[in-house]
Each structure stands twice: as structure tokens, then as C-alpha cells.
Image (tube, rainbow, N blue to C red; front, side):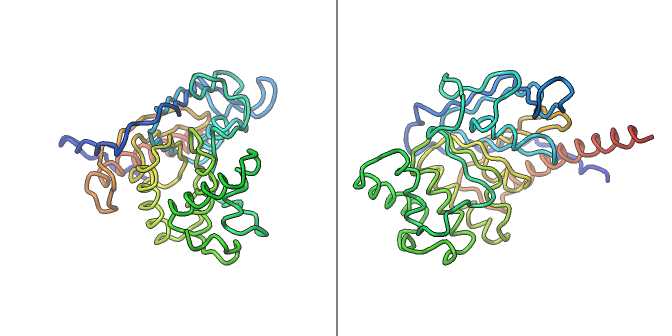
Length: 286
């Protein structure tokens, strides 16, 4: 398969719209010279090699790349669920040594507790933090309003649509007021129409809260629609192949010609990387 040619991108992109308020003082994520092997010793496969990535407070960074490039491993290192073999992971200059309430994660599968109501699922993390009942109630009501589900708090998980479940999962992550929101393909299992609606919703929500977001996806369209920067990774081992800024103001409509141009650039980078990996595999079997 021949990669799609990258367009000549000579006309300047419009500047991003000004924030509705000051950027947050916390949420700087520094991943420096990250190397990761899933097992001990040099014979374990090298999944990530030399990854250096800084997410500034309030920035929305999206990571894309071919399967097996280590996107999810990188996200799990940022979450503290994995420890890097080498390099450092810092949040606001403090080492990331394990999971913590300053980082909240949203997965492809919502992970809601089916025996709890939507509101009780959102409240769960606040209970674990030991917050008083009145503060928990106030935060849950606010979080449900942010995801436009104020009237659904009493419903059980099986009574919610797929899109509603993911919005509850996002509310559960945001209600603990993390410095960084980590999202691992949160919309991948949804139908195209629901994904489009949730893209619009997440754009508005991020613009209101200005959380730092590190988001992993396989969807190029999703990446360019949401990101301040798209990080394209190479594979075997995972390295940063290219960083592509997206200087298009929010909210971003799907039919934006600027996004279409950027999508072609990102898609070409991924196609070329897939072609490189396939060629190496073919040569290795000869």
C-alpha cells in the first residue's frame, strides 16, 4: 500500500482561541528518556526507548501510532501503573512512584460498578479519599452537571447507553480534581455518531476545566479534532517519530479543511511507519 502523499501545508493555521480563564498552576507531566521492558534483564523485549515528552499544564496531548508501538504502556507509566526500566516520570517535579489521586484514568471499557447508581459510581473515589458527605454530594452534583447527566444520577449502569456510561466514567475521573487526566481510547467501543457527540462534549468540558490531558487513540480523526499536539510514535521499539501541533481554535467541526489537511499528514506518518515495520518483518523471514 502506497502511503497517501502529505499535502503542501503553506497557508497558516488560525491561532487557538484564548482560554476562558488562566491556565492551571499544576499538571506539568514530564516523561524523560523513558525506556520500558516488561521483564527483567536485557533479553526482555524493549517496548519503549528514549521517549521524552512534556505535557504543559492545561495542554491536550494525543498519542497515535501503529499497534505495538507502546502507546498504552506510556500512558500506564504516566499513571504510575508501570515503572519505567530507565528514565524518569515526574508530575509537577515530583516523581511518579505509583497511582495517585493527582492522576485519573479513563479506559476504553468504562469500569463502572453495576450494583451502584451513576451518582454512586461518581462518588466512589471521593469516598476513598474520606471526604465529608456534604462535600461529596456537592462535587458529584457538579460533575454530573458538567457531563450533562444531572437527571441520570439515580440510574443503574444497565439503564445507561454506552455514551452515557463513558460520560459517567469521565465524571468519576474528573470529580477527584486530578492534575492530569489520562485517557486510553475511551471512545473506541462506541458507534461513530456517539463518538462524534462525545468529541464535542469533551472539547467543551476540557475548555471549561483546563485539565492537562494525555489521550491515546488509534483514530487519526479523533486525534486532530481534540489535540493541541499530536504525538506520532514509531514501533518496535516505541519512539517518538514526529510531533504535530494543531493550532485550530476550539470547538473544532469535523468538516474543518485545516483538520483534514492535518489528518492526512498524521495518517501518512502512520502509514509510512507501518510500511517500514512490515518491510523489516518480511526481510527478517527471508
